[in-house]
Amino acid sequence: MKGKVSLRVRIFFSMILLTIFSLLLIVVATYFQYFAQNDDYNNRRLIRKETQVKSHLKNIITKDTTIKFVPKNYDYFLKEFNPISTIHKVEFALYSLDGKPLYYSYVDDFDETEHLKIKDTIIKNLTKNQTSRILEQNINEKGEFQSSYSLLLGDDLKPYLILYFPYFEDLSFSQTELNIFLVRLLQVYSLMLIATIFFAFFLSSFITRPIEKLRSKILKTGLLEKNNRIKIKTKTKEIESLARSYNKMLSELEKSAEKLAKGQREQAWQEMAKQVAHEIKNPLTPMRLTIQSFQQFNVPNEKNYQKKLESFLKTLIEQIDTMSMVANTFSDFATMPKPKIKDQDIVEITNSAVQIFKSSNVKIKSTKKKIIWPIDRTQWIRVLTNLIQNAIQAVPENRTPKINVDILLEKNKLKMNIEDNGTGIVKKDQLKIFEPKFTTKSAGMGLGLAIVKNIIDSLNGSISFKSEPNKGTKFSIILKK
Image (cartoon, rainbow, N blue to C red; front, side):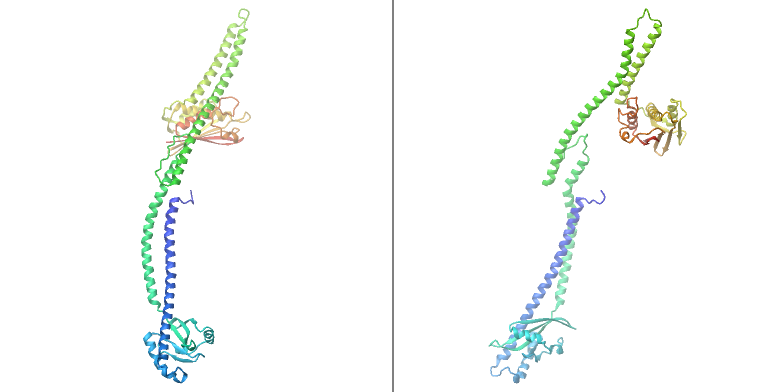
């Protein structure tokens, strides 16, 4: 069927798509997980560096208890702050609690003018929560970085400085590491995909093999044929159940077919017996009446005795011949003699058959003067006479019969058309026209066309017809070599 996809193909592509989907899912999950871990690492590193700087600053400020960290002593402490940037490899800046810049390290990547400024909102938020840390995402010509603002608290937990700490993430290594990981993952999954294609092909074949076997068996199942049971060695419960159901159906089908065949045989014999009885009864009635009339016949006093006796015998013989014809007709239909196939001239046989009717209303037309074809001459004449006789009888009395017989030879195919201008065949009778005992005429046994079809079938040919009411009928015979 067009547009339908087999189960095997569905399983095959489903496994491949599942593998591809899982690959994409793992790549996406890995990508986000990698960056989440990277962000977590950088946040922890920022806190660690910031804590180290705070600890270092506190040590410097509290190292000499005689010198307090007040504005007049700022210059002394600021000189001590310079090595911190080199030791911890970071840059930082210090602001007073009102936002005035006190110190900033000299690092090339650090934009001094930007870091000399501190927003009022930051100061406000820090004073609200002294233990908090404010992070801002910034960007400059060097790239993205995080700005961290926090308070430096004394031993009395009172703030005395604002620490600004810019943190630049080095993403080059992380990105390179991620790319290497993704490339390796892609290589592994490419091999897995190739393996999956082969595995899916064999697995889909293995799964659908019992179903395919079951399908082929079902296709060969016939009502009047000997059907074999399905024996499938499989551990699949559903397929085994399906095979059992099919075998059970075969058993029921055979029983139904046996009952049907028996019923058809009985019905056929009943119909045949009725038909034979009817056809034999028809001549028996005049025979009975003739004999009864002859019983009342007074020989001594009757004149023309010989003449009446001959008439009586003639009537009996005619009725006996009718009964014999009935018997022969049914015999011919029941046991069609084996055809004696020989190369015959179809055109010559057709002309010979038409001569029987002694009518100029039957016209024969052939594509060639002589067409040799392997047939049984006697049976072919019977086919022609039956069809032509039916054609003549189909024409009403008020119409001149026009019967056309066309013979065509096309390569290895012989075609013959017999067309009349009769009353045609009504639609309801067309399906039964080749059935035995069916007739549209007031006389006859309805076996003529059935015998014709049997003969054509024995020649491996076909017969069909087209009919239009009150216009005529055309029978077409096709024989192939």
